Image (cartoon, rainbow, N blue to C red; front, side):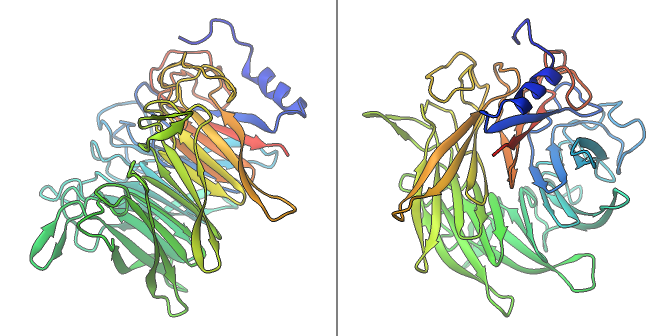
Length: 458
């Protein structure tokens, strides 16, 4: 139940903008033009780069295909086909909805928008449950789009499948792009070793764009160094420079693996990061330069003299003296059972954002132990600081909650960060608005979902 009295969001934004004491200010409460109950907008992938943002809505159910299809969202005849929304920042710094994106031929339960990525003018969107054919179901697909910054037009340039599509492999469950390279996770893929099948081992496919071609070509399919012991390799992927991190959260060796590309364009395993206790370590990964963050949402976190089941944790690593060192293990201030802190992570420079979509507090105050809003969710921002004596600390900089805190919002289900812009998805949010910065107290569309754009002000 939302609070019965709530001043208009515009006034709230103005207050945030005028209060110099606030390091983080909510700028935009993002809803979409065709918002509908159970769409769970913000429950898929989210990516932000400069003045572009894309957010997935994998449970969206309209059946019209293409980019900005006519009468979009006026039917629910393709349940769970999914959608994605592209937003741009105008000359006044205001985010606006640009394109509503569907696959050319929406399939029910394809989950288009479950994963997204942006780099330069390229936007990639995954549909990990899409069928390749009537006999190859759930194999997954990735759609590659090109965006023209001047005309603000979007074109589909490529439809990508695994080299040998197979049923229920979920190609496109995760996507990363950097420079001319793309990494696509296919975490449920079976791998044959010495005539024995290793189920759910997973692969990650690497593709490269040529110097003149607008499309990407398959180069290599990577697999885990722990085939029989680490499952779902490719659940999460992240790229930065010539490095790629791949999560493998299931099995006896929950892990994340760092691959590096040499000058010849060959990718080699450089290092494997291991969890001290499992905890679905590798469910989420992020890399920026010499820093990596790995989420373990089912990690049993310490709290005082006890241990809290599935509270979650995130592990930050730093490349020092040709080695990856665990610089810090991050936890919520008050870890609680099944918060799933670390189910999503993002990193940019010295800032890390961690999602905990089942966190239960009813206040945006990390100093309070509060469980009055079940599964309302939260996102935690940590900052890396170096002391004059060479010491390093990772400090909690801010705890984020939704505009109006209510149960089952699942705020923090997805997170993204670019510079000082933090984007957080809340797929359980019930707002009925169909515009950006509409009325957040309208509770008329259950689980329609929302995205929140927060700016770091200093």
